[in-house]
Image 1 (cartoon, helix red, strand yellow):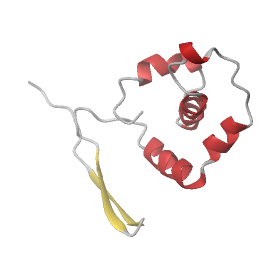
Image 2 (tube, helix red, strand yellow):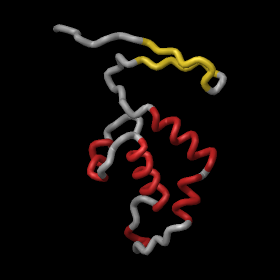
Image 3 (cartoon, rainbow, N blue to C red):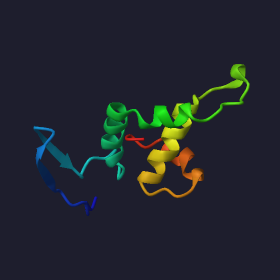
Image 4 (spheres, rainbow, N blue to C red):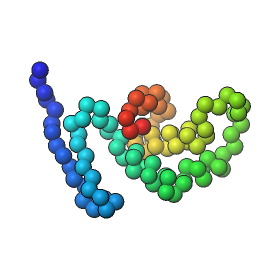
Length: 98
């Protein structure tokens, strides 16, 4: 079997005061690693929660599977990761980061 993968490690110095190593040779890798940082920023700032509080959710409560917060968060993170269309959400469900 021919292995054409490239093995490389990258060290991000002084990020969060801890050593962070990213390896790109993992079988279940994702190109959306920045979403982890987005989630941390959102958790700290609460921007998505405040944004969704401004929207009125007129859906029938008994039929809701995903909260308005979750729907907005998924859409904002997808746009931030470079996915312009909502139709990427189904494919991103299998992404280890998303």
